[in-house]
Length: 408
Image (cartoon, rainbow, N blue to C red; front, side, top):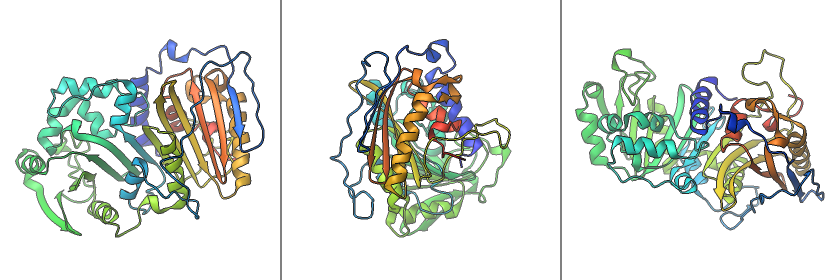
């Protein structure tokens, strides 16, 4: 399930970045969405007038389906999933972002390495509202120089990121062009934590450690450590790991070396990731836990029915192309019949449901184009919206029935 603590932080960022509370964002178009279902054998349209937004066309050149329902070739999402160990609750909630692609989508110039703090802040705030910037990088928007001094990490060097798991066992993987010498010099010289610094090695990768697992020391709160936890830090080639416990950093090292399975080795997870990659999203969420339609803040038992059939993995993502912003929903099921059921249910949710996180407005007044495709056990929906790029993540975090299992 989605953890409330992590969701609140992310939701607050999305609301701030997208301006979701403004009257302009809640304005709704007068036309209803165009809806198309392929592979299910039915096509329908509920548009009162022709829809001018063209639905994104799926691409299939980057990935191919394997005999087990997985995806053979790897893109950026699968690559990051390979780095996340398939242990415990790691697959319950995974957030991924390609910052370079998000910047390109927004037409934002990436500052040079070592850019002034104000330039870093302006860059991060200019990213699309649904770019799932990890918490460490969120803090860099206000404290880039402090992050550099404390960890030797230049926020501009971070190109992609993935977070997974549930607090306190939360994994963070950053991919980028990191300077190992700068990291080593910073962690040995910064004044708050260096007295607790020790080093260790696992599977040929060295890592830094401070204090006991998960232990908070409130007199040592810093820009990179708002909870006062020492954490563990490892640089493994172009990947940097930042976690609060020793077994966690060693599990990341093992996954990166192929010594333990990564999340991408699960066929449904890999298939969902590949389908999101096909649509060229720059930001994504994956979960192996069916969402229940009990909105945040609702009393137990006051939930409403969702629209999807029970699924093994749900994936959502945001992107932008020549026609503008779009978002994608992927659901992987046990059977093709369940995927067909989800396609029909999802279409009904868009046409008849209300967006719980968006003032209760009908989805049909917000979605301007909808294309649903069933591919075996997978349902793929691509949507255009008159709302902000953050619609999908806000709705997901508020447990909107659009993404939830029917009868929950």
